[in-house]
Image (cartoon, rainbow, N blue to C red; front, side, top):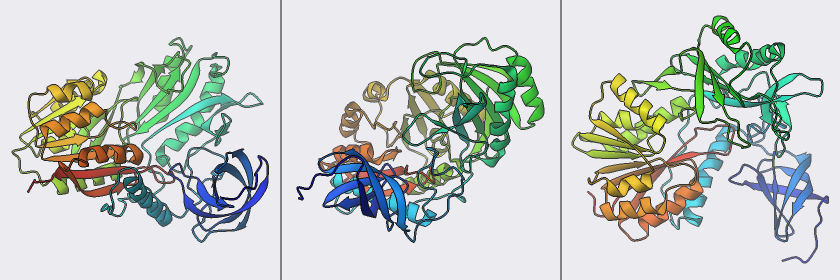
Length: 457
């Protein structure tokens, strides 16, 4: 290891060789690692060191000396500033290769799997205009204009947007015009530092198959003068808009949505078609942002499981039943477990709406419900939040030994950790991994891992 001291603010030349799991380019300088946003493997760049540690540093791209063959012109004119996407400057095929490699590296490094079978990444028709939901913070410009967009990378400076190339293009008129209406109404924009103001975020949502839209304002208080009239005007102006709501979040928090949502005009939900079923989706409902890719991943899960109709299936962390209900049609009995009571209420409604009567839902933490179920399922679906499964959940599965487990994850590090726990005693074997690109133009990847009891035939 070199003994040369490197300093914050120093300019260095770096060849970028890899991508980190957070999306930054990775290079080496005198045997030390340098992380550089907005770079691509194959770039040769001049970098200013910003945050310096003994063995690594974070830097800022100052000059592109030689571009990578995988570097492309971004579709968005503010892609170099906006923090919404990390990878618009990388060609899509290379994005997919990088994400697959990210999965392999996590399984090997964290999970201890020597040669995991990781399939090519599942994709949708387009890596742009795919998002069915977007939420934008508001701010006020130096000239007093209402702005909405995403924060600049590494800051709380807002990049104002009138359109976004990764959200469904049918939502762009609302993003551009709602700001003007708020300006005319004189509603006060929330100031995060002072904890003052009324309006915090704009939430937009669309049913990809139905075209129905929802518009939600996240506010600090319900009393918004003229909101009923304005909501009716929005419904008249946008024929596909079916509901306008307020969500109240009075807390000093980074969480976007508060606990209560009120419908001001129209209906409190949109209709969406998914896997030949109809779902009601509310403004704050969890529903995968890429409808088509989520459906494609479900088809892979169905193909892998080859359900015969006599199985008992448990869907842990089931949400509104997005996976539970399509799979329930192929088994004898299905049970959904979910912490959020509102999501379970919607799941029950969606089951009845689609005349699916062999499914029940339970409200509570999965780590509490799963060990007490009193049944041994044939199949368990795990789809936990980013932090992964509580150790109690893993231990419960190792005791009850369902024949097959499908683990769906949006964070490969916690997935690899949990798969190691499930497989290290030899009870379960990992058969294969199916990555799916739910989030093109970002470093995020969704993954489905398929496990079976080692003696399962």
